[in-house]
Image 1 (cartoon, one colour):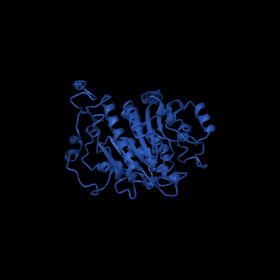
Image 2 (cartoon, helix red, strand yellow):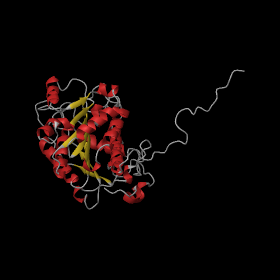
Image 3 (cartoon, helix red, strand yellow):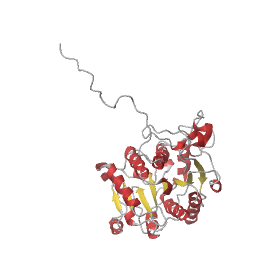
Length: 369
């Protein structure tokens, strides 16, 4: 990936061009350029966004087939320019990376496994040239995501950092289908792509899976931090542990984020909401720190389970709701942390006030006369 360039070098006038109305134009992700997968090499693309609109492996509430469309809609608010300087981290990922939208993988409603294999092929094709960022779709897509990405790059041992309300390690998922959205971790484990000691789950809570599944996870040397433990512990300690486990003897790391890990008050638009989840500041911080600690050249990411029709603020997905808006924000945070890691930095160049934050200590309290 290129180092010495700016967003204007990559995107031209559109990097800082005047905004256009959010209801104008084709709503690609962030209204970034649209490039066919077979043209990625010729276009010298660094990161490619792919939609995976599959929800027939869902076991409770369907609707994540509309996730990619809703996240793209949310990404147009605010509308271009492409410039996305983060005032907290001080980095604009579009100064470092050429990012494009490659559209959606082909899905065949009613033929779940065929659709998953199509997603695997699409991710494989992207991964030969660029870093894949996949927007789901239900969580079953992570198995073909990781498989296609690993095979394209020749990765034999992959680390996995998994943000989720559920472990997704069921032998046959929730309803006896081995490729449903509750079984994808078991699939990558059974394929020897991810070893237990290289897997960390962050945010589980509630009542599924049961004790037998967690006993099996413990025997496989998997590790997890419940949502309550996230709230009680130092986030940096959790991040450090997850990163150390994911990078210990592995070739690359995949980060998978299920929006049902979030407290549903913040992300109601999902198929299996469960009270007691993460709050946005916790999730954004941990994702930032995890990705900053990884090699961006051997990395992949997906965000899944956005179901906009259950989002109390989204009645049409014309400009997205709070859940799809959060997923959009998460993708941009991932890109920003990749840019920092690529530059070998822990922080960019945030603009800060002249005076230190907090009281200056120089104002005298008036005395009594």
